[in-house]
Length: 100
Image 1 (tube, rainbow, N blue to C red):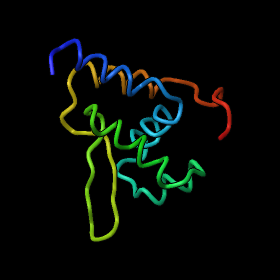
Image 2: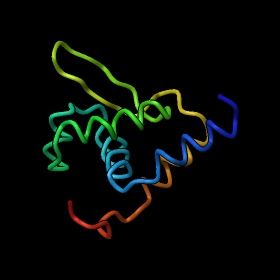
Image 3: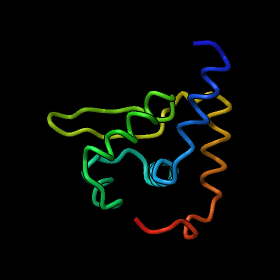
């Protein structure tokens, strides 16, 4: 993947309110079970899994599997661009987002 494609992949991952909420939550709370994210977002697991895959594939998240459970967290080895994006998300007032 060239630099332009990589950039577009990262920006595309951020182009969704649900993924912004996920990144904000994981940044504040650390590694979290998919089941807890599902309850927090009141979202079907299949839809949530799609969002998590996009964030993981773009380099924002890692997954830690423990038996049948999957836990996601913010990647510890973020690029400077990823770090700036997460920092900007942490500073957002997410109360303005519409409820799910």
